[in-house]
Image 1 (cartoon, rainbow, N blue to C red):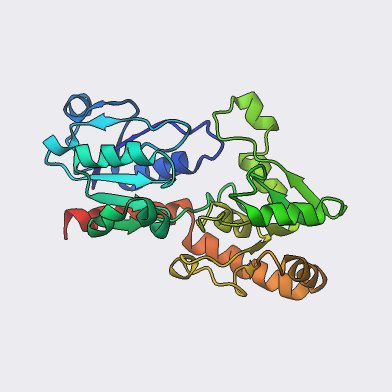
Image 2 (image 1 turned 90 degrees about the vertical axis):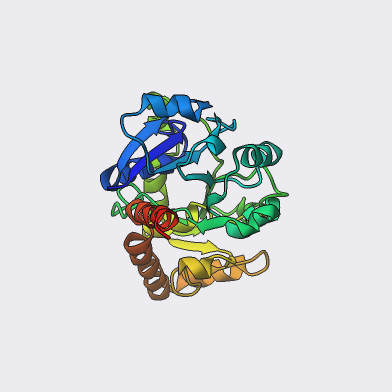
Length: 310
């Protein structure tokens, strides 16, 4: 069994639990050792029970670039850095990559990563897209009482121009339901019960016939591309460059929209119930069968093994 050392912050109380969910899956298929703090790698290795075969670092979730592990170039153990938001912490991360001589990366968006880190084109870069925890993002059997739903960040029109257009178009339409993003932060158990995160978020998605989403101006395949279909709700979102590699096909698993055609397409799929249900069902099955947390964890382990045994 792979001895894997994961160095990452605790995200179990964060807005999105995906990386905590990933940890739980990795623990089922590897001998997983988790370390949460910054420090020199040699000191960290003295504190763990077994010498790892591979060191995986996730340090760009949340508002600070942490944990910061130093001295990585001084150990012979292969190291990989997961890149969640390539556009954040750019200069700090460039210095970090250089000083630690990191050559292996796991990225949720390849073109965005290369845009900010062109020097890494000659390194080992693995595509590891987002995913859905299908024990939370699932069909709760809710009655479809919401015709048109959009949840998430709407205060940055320069980053999310499509969301801004949708919001302005439907803001006086009684069929449209919208709530802003709850913020990227830790939640207490009491706050989480009331916030639109986790199961509350999934249950709300499950009540909608159509859900509008996008990948921002950066064209990143976000969580929603997996979470919405996983809740048996029709995803209305732009087709993006990396969706083909993921296998999400417009017209089959979701409906492709843009700033001009979203009203017409929304009306069409509200009226054409059978066609809406057909695409919704295909999207639901596809995410549950290919893009759950367990699927992504297995993909990550395969990628790590390809580094070790190439």
